[in-house]
Image (cartoon, rainbow, N blue to C red):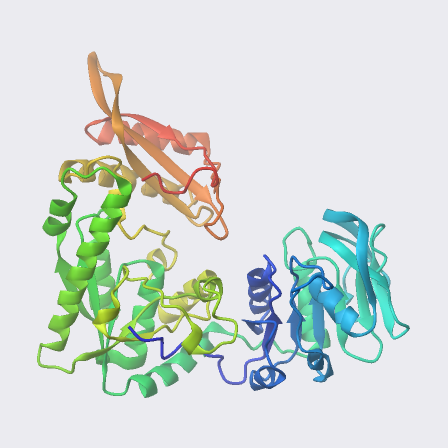
Length: 529
């Protein structure tokens, strides 16, 4: 499988803010905050050239934080000529220290590492701090700080332990912040970033998802031409948005393949079919391979073996379906569309330069083999998850698709602990539907990030009526998370949990006990498996 031939591109006329990423854990968050404020942002590597930056037609530049000290061996640095481009530059934490260092300041290790909230006193209310309080809370996370500034600098904010907590250069449009405005722990941080964009860079807030969609709808037909594209449709938000975007852009050049593995939630296949056949008039090929998948899983309890078998069968089914698309009298398939997102690109370590050749191949449709020989189309690869949902709304996808919680690729097989059988799947489907029904009814679906039921491989004693029972145990899992790398269990109100438990025990035959998972990730995982 070749490298992707297309990624998302900046809509014409949209103001762009490149963010030079020096390894900050908050770099993605900076990019998101800039986009939320109405400007388009891209992350670039420290070795980015001035020529590449100019090609982005930036309105300003942000230097991110990072874990290094600027004078330690191997510490990342950028071309000092970036400060001579005549553009506003905002340095955050390490970015401030580096920018100040290149402009003649002295950076030294602080007396003690500063981590946490600090009271910031503002000395200059114009520019960055326009219309902000004279005192505000700021989130610090640094071991080094500016100890001496040349006369060309002005201190515009300070804390008790950091005299130069915010600075500006008198002759250049360089600003430095020792604290992190991008985190929620800095309450006015988004206002500060808006001031940088609007008051300093002169942005007009032109980044709109509708413009993005229009740009893609012009770009994709030129790329595809008369050739055919297939999209592995799972029913999740990413693949659904890709399919809806391509359906609008290239029409009958698109064929979607949906593999029914028999491990889906209740009515899931019907939802996908009605959404894309009826609403978008897409050529949707449904492969019913439930017997094959369940046959592979017979007698298997090990979670990794489940995943291996499911992945292997999926590849086989998808490959056969793709071959049929090319042999039905129409043009052969040339492109494979995938729902790779910007965090995937960033985390690959190859997305900073913005060149398609460096992007790692993300097989979001199930791990497709290279010998399929398709060129990749990844029209979401500059978008964050929340932006994908926004694009889905612009495209007219139903809200229950746009806001759908993530669902694992192996489906309910990883939520049926132990052997997977049709009978156990039926029990779990009924339980899962009840859980989701009550979470939606309680208006908690949007405030949680993943909610589901798990069928445990144990039974417990119970009493129903005058009789003794010995039936299955179901666990309910609900988490809140920003990145799915860490997660905390959701504080679902007790009365909602009581309704869920009562309904499951009374309505689902074979279950007599419901438990609620109050484990965070780490040490637990989100899924049980």
